[in-house]
Image 1 (tube, protein in one colour):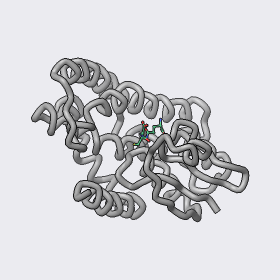
Image 2 (spheres, rainbow, N blue to C red):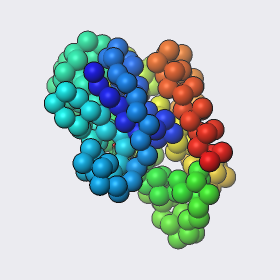
Image 3 (cartoon, rainbow, N blue to C red):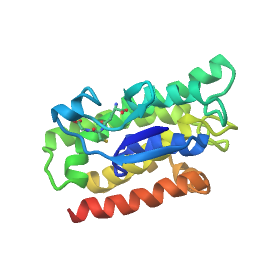
Amino acid sequence: MINLCGFAVSNYYNKTKLVLLEKGIAFTEEQVFPSQDEALLKRSPLGKIPFIETEQGSLSESQVILEYLEDTYPENPLYPVDAFQRAKVRELIQHLELNIELHARRLYREAFFGGAVSDEVKNEVRESLEKGLKGLARLVKFSPYIGGDSYTAADIVAWLHFFMISATCQKIYGTDLLAEYIPNYVSYMEFIETRPAVQKVAADRAVAMDAFLKK
Ligand SMILES: N[C@@H](CCC(=O)N[C@@H](CS)C(=O)NCC(=O)O)C(=O)O
């Protein structure tokens, strides 16, 4: 059985977990925090989470894991059949992660973990976020899913990262940049949250976040 390692505050951990739930794959969860401990580095090469353990060995990087799960468990597909449409799903994921979430991530220390980020970094990140969000606005369809008429891996990624990006912008800039550039994202989030697997991940995340902040 797949063993999913990480913790439920992480959007990348939750991405993997939501894929497992949506596809109906049996799995166990093991709470693991990122570190540079030798024992962890043997399981995850950079000491990051998430990673999964399979009968063939461990696998890191959420997008690699997602595509491995899709290849290995074809039931409840999260990618369209058509090659171009599959590429469009990957395009959305790549923009969401590379051009938006990775920039917002530089602010998480102050937004969530009680640290501080310089004004210089905040300004730099804002510029990158605005550019990334303008680009994403040109790609999203919300008809009713992010890429069109079917629920795909891009919806999983969008739902998770939108939550973090929106909360981060409100805390750091006092405004939800996501809402400014993609105004209808709020009703999209509500629509995605009608899915039972999404509700399960959101509930587990809320419990984990609460415990994490108390620590
Ligand atoms: N590209 C990685 C990102 C994973 C990631 O950044 N995980 C964070 C937790 S959300 C982590 O382990 N951070 C510890 C570190 O950067 O050393 C993926 O998609 O799995």
